[in-house]
Each structure stands twice: as C-alpha cells, then as structure tokens.
Length: 179
Image (cartoon, rainbow, N blue to C red; front, side, top):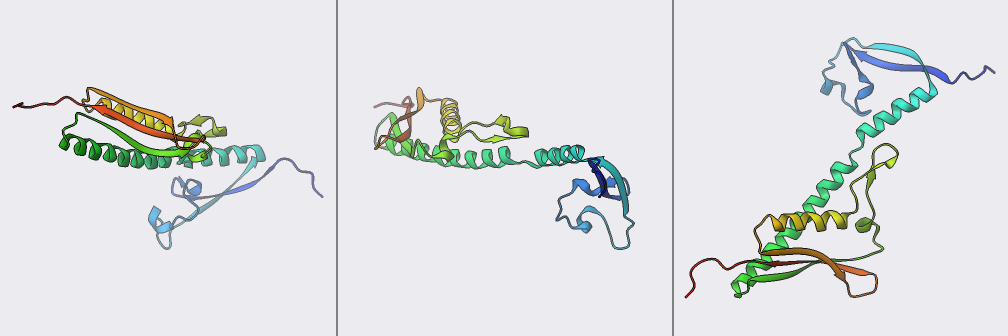
C-alpha cells in the first residue's frame, strides 16, 4: 500500500465567489440563489488531516446554538414565574395586604437540568451557569426594578432532604388616599 501522508484531497463546490462549504448540508440550492443550469465549480485542494479537523471544529463551534436556545427557554420560564408573582401580589393587595410570599417551584438538588452548568463553545470552556442561578438572579433583578420596598428571591429547604424551593418575598407601599 501507499504510505499515509496525513493529507487527502478535499472537494469544495463554488458558485461565483461563494464557497458552498458554509451552508447546511440539507440546503436547497434554489434558496441560496443557484438556479437550474447554473455553473458550479469543483475545487480540489490538498489539506492535511489536522487542518480538516480544525475546519470541522470551527464549523461546529460556529453552529453551536446551545447558549441561545437554552437562554430563550430559561427566559420563557422566568416570564411564567414572574406572572405567578404578579398574580399573587394582585390577589394579596385585593385582600388588603402590602406584601406577598410566593413559592415559585420546588426541585430536587440532584436534578441535573436545574443544578448543572450549561457548557458550550470550544472544549466546553464557556458556560451560562445553572438554571437555578439564572432564575434566582434574574427574578431578583426584575423585582428590584419594579419598585418594591423590599424584594428577595431565595432558596429554602423543601419537603424532603434533597428538595429546595425557590420563593419570592415582596413588600410594597400603599399609595393613594386613606380614609
């Protein structure tokens, strides 16, 4: 057999000055402007295997949407929790109270989804942290910006040894005429 030199011929399709390596594998050629009877050029190049891996890694890192999709999901959940807090506050105000304590959710400390940092990027070196921290700090910040006299979002012991609860405590000042 022939000795392995660590390289191979790589093929790329080129349309005008656009290299089609950068499009998803399932791209419809019509969607990227290639019409029937268009001229495509096949370009071959000798690329070492490590360079091929580097190119593939770069493409994979650039296509990684872990952070964006995870943060979008978490933000939607935070919005649901904020609605729960607001509903509880309105109910309490109608009952002549100037405060509310709202249990938002309970989870098991062994729940990977809630407690583990979400890593992404090259070698998993970037992180958006765990969902529980995102929710706690995000809700705390949102509540502080809403003008409450006091607002806290804290974890407390749940029903069992491994359970934790996230609870929001808010206090507001009565405004308006008093009789």
